[in-house]
Length: 250
Length: 67
Image (cartoon, rainbow over all chains, first blue to last red; front, top):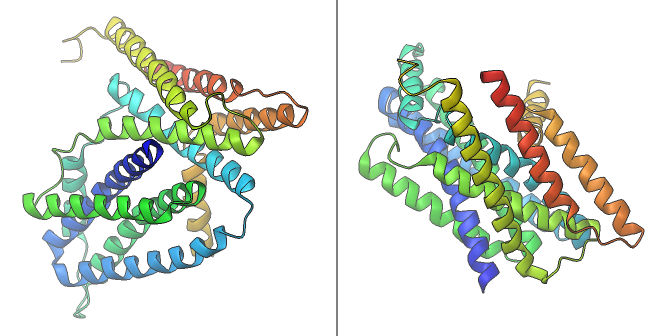
């Protein structure tokens, strides 16, 4: 039950972050260039993603569970550690915060500057929406398929991802603008921590490690990495203030 | 060809990202853990410790570049 909740929460948060990024692109293009071609692009990308899930899902069942855990754990570890590293650098002021409002403005300016063809189909809107949804969607698919397969709960992982997409799209349509109010870095920090922890647990298990406390070891890994990340963020903040005291940048 | 290149770029970005040293460090830590397990040593502590060190080192390098 506890691992199901953790699985649901991790998949939900990770999918929500990707959905926010995809929605920012779609909203920016749709608002400036019109919705018809943009939504066709979203639909086409969704169909391609469904095809990938249909192919990947059954294929994964043919791989021995130990090998699957090792490969999936290693991939999650590499991916999660990138998020965690960047989130720590952003929290301590060493990297600018990923601002969805400025991403929205940038996408909108680019969309407005692009030339329109004479045909009824606006291929610029189609391509940008298609690529945005496909790329962010692929990351969601990867998270769902890997989390679901290693735990034997693909249905639960897919439900968590679907819930995240529905919530994000609902909020996006409701506010009709960029999702700037979502504290993206805080979510990325938490998701990076969870993905890295699951990655350590599964890749270790796949490599032949027997974890003390069995599944409870995941909580221990989360706590350990949380402390390490917190200590690193604090140290970096202090270091940043020592190099550039407040007000010195103005 | 263009699709193959963007497919490979997606996976490179997904796994390696902008710091290849971290990816290499993880590969070494995973290999070592598997090797020790193969020889009967249950090195459960190795991966969390390696991740903490890799994280610290990557952040230290990046922060030094900014300052």
